[in-house]
Image 1: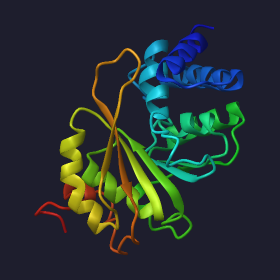
Image 2 (image 1 turned 90 degrees about the vertical axis):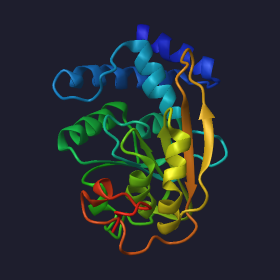
Image 3 (image 1 turned 45 degrees about the horizontal axis):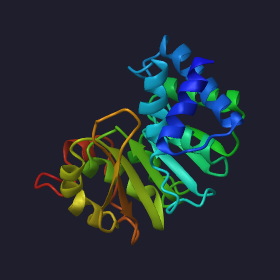
Image 4 (image 1 turned 45 degrees about the vertical axis):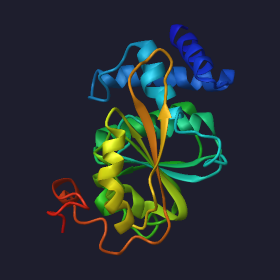
Length: 244
């Protein structure tokens, strides 16, 4: 199958080894992505090699072999079509994954992928981060929160850090302006119980685009006032004069 070969080559070029079972799961994921994308807007990228590199390998670039042991409880906030959470789950099946998205159509797609791939310990939740982070079963209940291409880092920090337990981390996938975003988010991270932001450059096979993983460690509990009500973090990002 063309996609399976593309995925195998991309993984090898990035330095990852995938089993035949994992390659098959990525292939099924790709087929479902293309099929459902005809009905609902999931991604503008559907060509096999681009999906392999720009979605799947990009998602796996968050795996650093240090912050992960492989059995963490992890939440993907604003997961969309399942990136980066589902590729990470395929790569390390022991992860206990929660996928959170505000659009129910996407959540139905995610559940279809989980069922088709036979993935265990995956929960798909329909909801907004600002509201879900106030759920006692979710708040500060995760070792790792991840998010990719959702909002600028000061906003994402307010969405994600309240989900992370003290001692855990929040990982954000970022592009060309990652240094500027890290600088913007410094104050927000401190307000929300986070520590100093670490940056790790990422180079994907065959791409010259600038990418980075930004890591915010959780050092103390997030104040009860955060996240603020739905829509407020985006309109008034923390750390800026207009923030509440």
